[in-house]
Figure 1 (tube, helix red, strand yellow):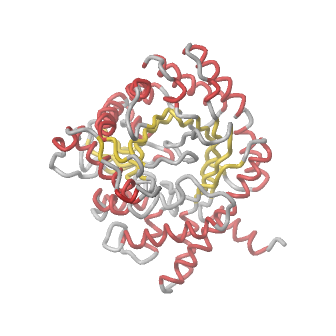
Figure 2 (cartoon, rainbow, N blue to C red):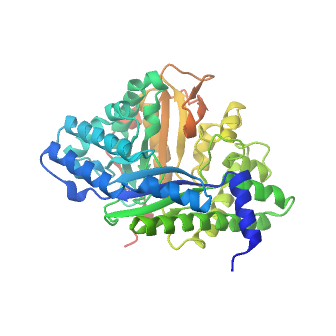
Figure 3 (tube, rainbow, N blue to C red):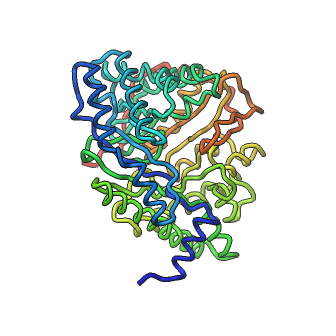
Amino acid sequence: MINTEDILETINMIRQENLDIRTITMGISLLDCVSEDENRLCDKIYDKITKQAKDLVKTGEAIEKDYGVPIVNKRVSVTPISLVGGAISPEGYIKVAHTLERAAQNLGINFIGGFSALVHKGITPAERNMISVIPEVLAETNLVCSSVNVATTKAGINMDAIKLMGGIIKRAAYLTRDNNSIGCAKLVVFANVPEDNPFMAGAFHGVGEPDSVINVGVSGPGVVSSAIKRAGDCDLSTLADIIKKTAFKITRVGQLVASEASSRLGVPFGIVDLSLAPTPAIGDSVADILEEMGLESCGTHGTTAALAMLNDAVKKGGVMASSHVGGLSGAFIPVSEDRGMISAVERGALSIEKLEAMTAVCSVGLDMIAVPGDTDEAVICGIIADEISIGVANTKTTAVRVIPAYGKTVGDRVDFGGLLGYAPIIKLSEYSPSKFISRGGRIPAPIHSLKN
């Protein structure tokens, strides 16, 4: 039986507390598009995507209207392009990327993810060709997103791939220098990448997935923050329970939208990603949640403990609300996309070292962090290696989306606009890891990976 109070509470969450469905993402397999002829490959990719997702935007808008739930983004993810492109030339991979852009524009979606490669144990010639043109692809397209998985707990860390990605990130920053180096905001370097993530820029359609699938990402930091505020001066056990119950309610909305989209599109329901994804809007911040829990500022001592409790409670509540939970699922801490995080960096309370510690207990990793444009490649590689090692050692997904903002330095800020927000340029260590990075090779998998 429908409870009137529950309906009113949900309406308030949407109107007052920024509850939304952050994305409906349709995953599409391109494995049946493989062709030795790059023109034929592009034609098959375009036809497959535009046919499978032709009703995605229309259906999302209809669900918004019928249920009154905002659905911010409609997106598509595809099979990692390095697996589909095979032996085509670097120029052929650029042509594929433009095909993805054209398909996304035709569909009217926000982003398309999957210009991706999985190189956690080694790099094939095809993958090297694809990775080599990532900077050009990000500079020449607006909707195409890219990701590279450089490590897993089972395989260890491919330091050669990390060394390669340092240069790729620097070149992407340079080629998009006239637009605040925004190309880097569409590129993620992963450890233990999930195959069903609906969030950009790291979404792709894994090889273990069906031909097409619907994945939904929910968001509600403002809802959680308001619930904590209403709870008043309670102990942490009670607070954890309140967060858990609130996450349950948020995720139920996501489950409803996912099931409805799956039914209307005739596509299998995949997962609900129950991540708390912030926006630059006031009242929609993970940092605000942490401060509502009792921290004077996000970044102070105790921040990691508060975030660990938040992440755990969100997962416990969300997993009970959906038949299938996946993706990243937890609390996101992207600096530029979270007004509270931005403020904490600006007041000097939040450093990159503290952010790195926080990523050990929450979703994803060092996300949307702007650094000086003249940052050395080796330093970027060191940032990636540190974060990736946290994922490998803790058997969790971690990632890096770092933006060396061309022409900017500490004290400046870079504005990306929209959901990407703006970010102060964060201070980095003055010392170089270049000799360590230049050794190359692979860091072996940790001993606890041997579980067979």
